[in-house]
Length: 125
Image 1 (cartoon, rainbow, N blue to C red):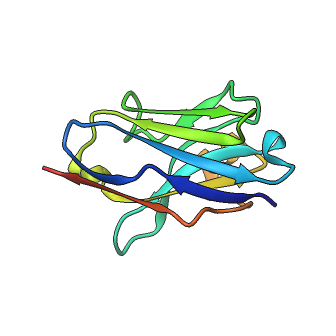
Image 2: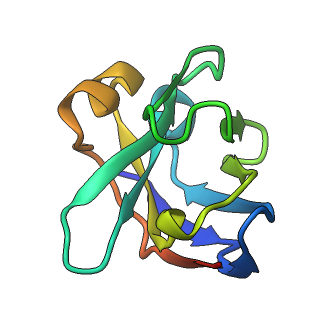
């Protein structure tokens, strides 16, 4: 399994943008679908976005469609989550994860592979 390290979280105001990064170490990154989940305080993690191993097929939760964009750079073993027009309700800990299927993460709301340690995103109103 790969090891994942997220970065890029922080405190921003509503309407601002942030870009999260997740760097993977290991030999299977190019074979894995990757995704982002988030966890609100006191709640279960929820799916945010995922992307196929090739980087050609993304999936998004309805709550972030049109505002967030997931991408990956397989040469750098890195995935990104560009978050625009942030809202206070986007405040959460964001995790990256690996899984055999990008669609599987979206449908099942879970990932079967590795998880990062999370990065806090706080959006003030």
